[in-house]
Length: 506
Image (cartoon, rainbow, N blue to C red; front, side):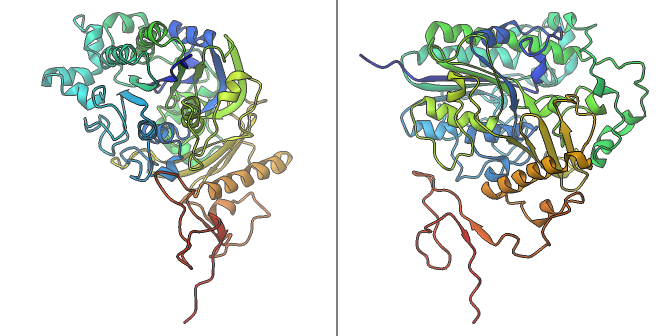
């Protein structure tokens, strides 16, 4: 008997908060198709991006490596040439890989360069520049003008989301009998949020539910957050604060409908496929008096929706309560394809949690931040941050600012910074040790004594030039990178992690 094909469809949107899906929280934003996916599979309650910025988040999703490891620690930076993508790894096994939608990993601008990267099927490559090149100059301007949503002549077929969907449906039908990975990466609901006008009309008076943390004054919080909040700190929100953004919420409903069309095509042509839905990051929507996304690790931007369905494995409507990360998705795709997961990849396959949602994949997950955008001088500039979350407590080290500790069990809105609370010092220090270990394990190029010597860490070691005195070679990646050679002998290093030999004295 011929084995059924191993197929994966990875769907994603841009800037969708975890709680914009009805399956996570009933807010009034309509997401019936994603809710249907949640009902048919597993909803991961505590999923996190690796960095709450577009390109770094995508670099982790599609290479399985951390932004600080692969070189994409800001927008407009591409992964290194020695960091293979999922498309390249699958092509080496003669598995078709299609990528349709926003890529944001070629190191150019927001729209991309229009050229299909190595490993992905050129016939279906369709980044945002590809879309713009189909339009007249007037249509291009309209596609970027938020006021276009008020034009009664705008139809679904004009939008990027619709055109991505058409190509995705064709891909699934053409590859129905073979192994494949299909990524469909929508730009929506990211601004400008172009939709047919009836969607924005429905949300013209819509107010997103109130959360207590929209009114906090950022007392005891990092200085850079107060700078980010700017004039919003002076706003009187004591009587409430209404969160309105008709285009953003409308675009979420619109793209949900497009996702529904792809899901219908999958059910017709690839009913056994592994289906994954997520978002690259969220949006602050005024929480903590902040807007958009940037150098913070609040759940509003770092926590993401993650829905997974694998027929015959996932029980319908199940919920996994434990922390997982985008870094785990590349190993999941490779494992489902029947491939060995290279040591070079940083995450763990989620397949055991799909079979048993109570199975805990990670003791803790990590989030980082480097810079928002290389091209822009603003957005706070260089903001090195490293954070850890163990399922209840979240520690954030803001290297150039003030650090944070939150107990999300008692304080889900992350209002009370416990970083200097003696009652939490032991737990705080254990989490801090994990951040330092993780930075070493992942060869973080920004690691060093300054991450350890924080004002609240009384037992930090004295600063030394050698720090921990170790050499940490890159793990071998068969077919891509051999084991590194020992600098002192020129022979293959017996251990990737080893004490650094003292230099010879002439």
